[in-house]
Image 1 (cartoon, rainbow, N blue to C red):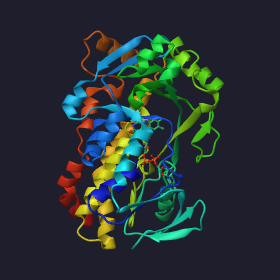
Image 2 (image 1 turned 30 degrees about the vertical axis):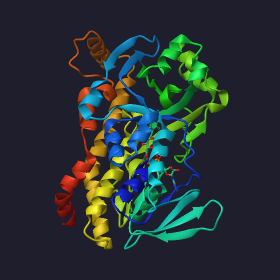
Image 3 (image 1 turned 90 degrees about the horizontal axis):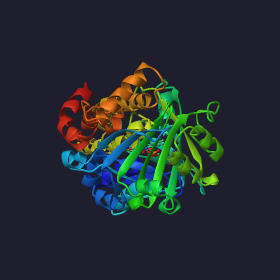
Image 4 (image 1 turned 180 degrees about the horizontal axis):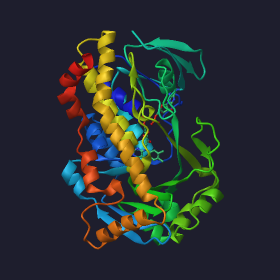
Length: 430
Ligand SMILES: Cc1cc2nc3c(=O)[nH]c(=O)nc-3n(C[C@H](O)[C@H](O)[C@H](O)COP(=O)(O)OP(=O)(O)OC[C@H]3O[C@@H](n4cnc5c(N)ncnc54)[C@H](O)[C@@H]3O)c2cc1C
């Protein structure tokens, strides 16, 4: 998401030679949904591709937070104020809709060239001009020099590993102890069951919570698909090497993890085809000592992987891309020292915000996953107060909490980069 958006944002700033190298042979999309928050929508709108994405996405108008075991509603939050307050809706969509929409917009620019099935293998130089080695799937390796390299190579980033080693630094992979199943059910398979059909026909995000586990679910693709994303304690990857992030899961195991959840959830999980169960390990890493080295910068999950509990990981990668495009467009020259300085400006503009969201997402997960005890009693008291209309407005599920949303959705990364560039540029020259 970060790489595609960066290509588009740079083309729109008038950069003439943008090459995108992608390991996969096409944008053969992970079958999963994604939340499209207003801070993401605002950027995509500025880049001219939001309208197309919005057409297929589902407008979120409410959320229901429910006890996983009983299906009892703990809180209901009307979210229609979001479109009014932020001038952009909060939507949910298929990942292919999001990536496809950005990709299609990229194709309007001759400046952008895509190189699929081409793996970054090594970083041969960081400065004065960065040099990369690529291994295409069906051809000989080749090396490429560039003015600037933006590494949006995800949570397993090879660029991060190489950069840390070049800086003689480390940032350990942190095992979150959590894993996720990602599930998509077609409207057709849910149609025979009225209590499931009402979910796919709604404009609601529904979260079922339990100790150390939860499920978040919403309709995507114009209501034709119901997307479920689970979080549970990791048992299958515990002994796996840190490079292992996904595995084909077993339906029996998945059902066992949620065996004490309510019959409605059980019925949905039972609809999943045996060979379509895929489990993701959630790993993050310790904060990095630096996001750039010479003319190479990391962005998105490569430098600030964010747990999915706030649904902001892709949004933050997209904010990085938008910030980078403004900063590099304002950089006075393409001399290597100016470009390296620009990448430090980008880090300075982005680090505090990204770090705050990484921490908020982790904290929100902890609140959702509480087991019996005083903290859970306090959380549930807040849920009850909310339900009875005597809450102070605070929602323990931070994703749906208005004050938290204000901090996340109000942020206009382009305006910040435009407004702060001169000051931070001066600071980074010192
Ligand atoms: C269960 C779950 C639910 C989530 N839900 C949401 C949500 O609702 N909203 C949200 O905003 N975020 C969500 N996220 C987070 C989001 O998916 C990520 O934060 C986002 O995709 C990160 O974007 P990125 O561009 O940094 O990396 P990625 O999207 O991971 O892209 C990295 C790209 O680099 C390529 N690549 C990797 N290595 C190489 C190499 N050596 N050579 C060439 N190419 C390479 C990969 O093939 C991939 O295309 C969720 C994450 C999970 C796990």
